[in-house]
Image 1: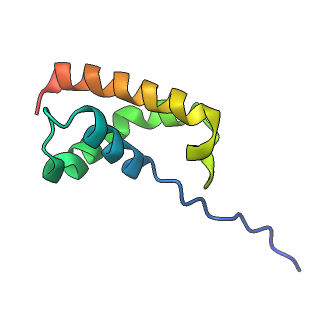
Image 2 (image 1 turned 135 degrees about the horizontal axis):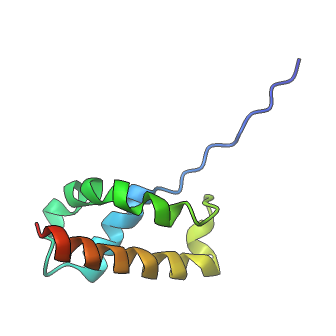
Length: 84
């Protein structure tokens, strides 16, 4: 009997959020706090990630720029509503 195995995807939404925080919000979110803030943001950003088919090479696709922009906008709104 053969099992249909899914290949694991190593693209990380959490790491992507940390990168957005480091690159776009360095003044608002200290680098050492970026991971904990990203963990707080992750539930809010799940709906953004759900709009994309994520794969290991996703960050090299044209859609990655659009995802990055959507995440940046989501973080702006979240920071305005919640602060740090």
